[in-house]
Image 1 (cartoon, rainbow, N blue to C red):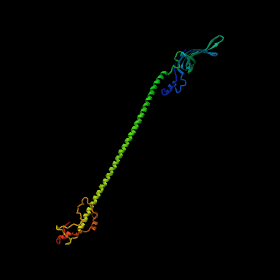
Image 2: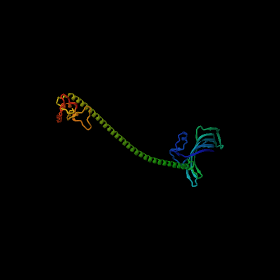
Image 3: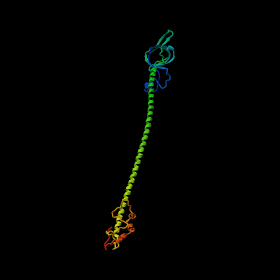
Image 4: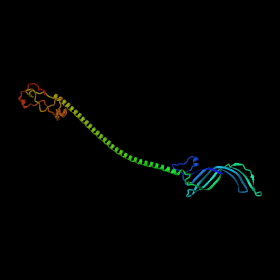
Length: 337
């Protein structure tokens, strides 16, 4: 008599959705494989308990008694043939192993009396190590339209529909992401080109404005330089004019000191007592030349050259008209110029 509990399962492919187990116990009982070699094979594992009343004699001495066993069971079920009605014929291969408690006694066969004689009284003993208790090779005829190929699957149909839906959603998300990427790429290209053109135009305008500022600054600097040069030349001319007037004044003072006293009757005077001026006019002290009148060569020369080159006017010539005028009184000096 035997009772067992089985857990049927099928191997699963390890992928990104079905990760491999990491724990020792999980890996020990895991149904996840790197490579699925038998996708149609169904595996089972479980526990069993059995009671046996046995009598075994293979030689001169025999054993009889009772046995209790408990342990684990493991096996496979492989589909062999599927009928039109939906029934299937499967192959069942398995084995059991566990601990055994035995109450066994020995006996022999007495041919003279034609009976079995007990030679050793038995008692309950437990085998101190696990031992195999069963090996199965059998055929299973399965009734119904639900064969083993559909039974104990990991909800393949439901999972397939669910996976199809998930894949559809994922594919749609991928398509949306691609469209968004393309749209963003096009927009980014347009945006980039726009800002490149905008930046280039801005750089050109900025460079143009900078160049105009540089040109204006250069023009202003040139104008300032010319104005400074003009001011410098003007200051130099003013300094030269001042030195010339100072030299003329000094020369005039020297000539006044060197001028001889006029002799009696040497100089004729007009009736009004003034002498007729000569053709040359000496500018008055502190008087600048009038506008439009350029200074003569004699005025531009230094005081030493004027003193040597300019003829003396100590005795002015008298004109024909002065000869007709009465002469000045003896001893009377000519009036100032």
